[in-house]
Length: 261
Image (cartoon, rainbow, N blue to C red; front, side):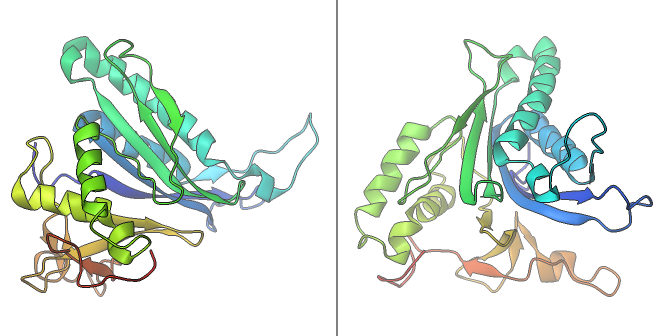
């Protein structure tokens, strides 16, 4: 629809305890990432509804069952994926009634799960055989493995492995070879169904944060084609809170050969 359509987001999971009757002191439970490919109508609506439901959870009083500690009530990433599945299937059915060929969407949910103590990622997708049903799969993201969503998985995976083979194992460029590969695809318009702007998001045990990307030939702080300083600027007495970023890599990454993730 437009090159400036974001497909990668941060979602905060907030809750209110039982005795906060006025709902004025939200507690941050989790901060997760969501990315999607395919239908922008389905993807953006799933993101918006998920943000709405997870942004203000209320602690439930248990009157007919044993109570348990607040930390044990925090949803797992799998439980959030189940909620996203319910929302996504509703929009797929709605869109599919009128545009059956366009009701395709893949969603990635990722971040730190406090209940398991692990960084995890899930893929949610439907298929031509069962278009109304979204299947949830946990992705292996250990030891440099990567999760690809979209219609060109095999082709992009081959490009990533080819690029990764050029770097010393466990170097910065080796870890970030998926990012380098995607940057080259967008830069060279190499694959017709991949376009627009690069987005950059990092999840850790502390937070999930969006970062700007700086093109190598300029000093812009770009978020999906919007420069934070010149296109957005001040909002009242504040600036947008995305205050860290990364330089766009060259064809063969950054001018570094060693380093950590």
